[in-house]
Amino acid sequence: MIGLVAVIGLTTSPAVAAKPPPTPLPEVTVSVSTDNSGLDGAVPAVLARAGDPIELLLTTTVPFYQDVTFTLDVSVADGSPDGILSPNQVTLPAKATSVAASVAYSAVENGVVITPSVGGKGKPIAFTAIPSMAFDSLRTLQFAQQGATTVGTDTCTTTTDETNCGVALLPLSFASARAALSTGATADECAGRPCKAGSTVVQFIAALEGYTAEAPATMIYRCDKSQCGNGGVNKFKVYYSYASSGPLSEAPACLVKNQANPGGEACVDYVNSQRDNAGDLLLYFHFTHDLRGTGY
Image (cartoon, rainbow, N blue to C red):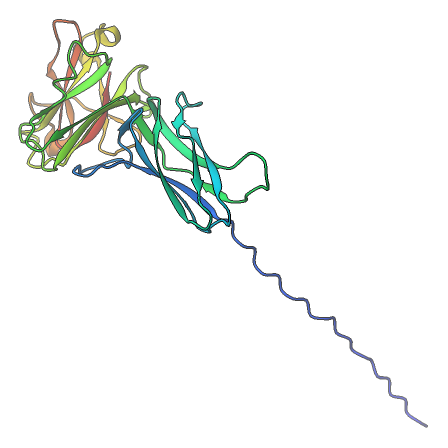
């Protein structure tokens, strides 16, 4: 008998080339800053009044092969922005990875964010937009040079147009080359709840050295009688933070007149706090570090 051998043929599929990984989209980032040289402490990247110049840098991780004009869209922390950014466009040259511009925002607001976008006619340009860090556009801003022992006495008076303001009393001056005192938009969060309507943040920035609980620096918060005209001095509070952004915590009452609390804890000196002849509230707040704060 002749044996039959069955041979099963094996076939192979043609090799399929692996797909290359997708090319990542260019990341277009907006950065914002101001010249904060000479200051020390919790300094925000942007320290500017509404309308003051702010340095903007737009960068891309991958250059484009043609000029691209980016629109600078503005958003804010509490809804629709009240101001405008000028200019609101910047052109990135072909094959460039960055372009700088000087811009200004017109309104006093918290949490301003700038995001790049491209619209209009023509072929769509694909990229990933990285917005700027949020910054506050301030109402007032003044600087003092090293050696100054008061800041704000010329602006925070009974004649000021500000509902809230502050005067820093600095018997040891400060160690940094400059100090900055500013007021901003209505405070957002006080001790985990909304701050009183109309209360504004007073921010003091400098390097303080040598201040102790027994010999502190003092901020006098002035609140116009139109906002703080009713109630005894002890009814009103101060909320503060040593950070350049974020929520504010309620300050305790000082245990001893003219002193901060043990360990240099900031506090409200209700013994010294008073109303002036115009009926404005003056809250004395003792501290040993640069800070942000609001009253009432």
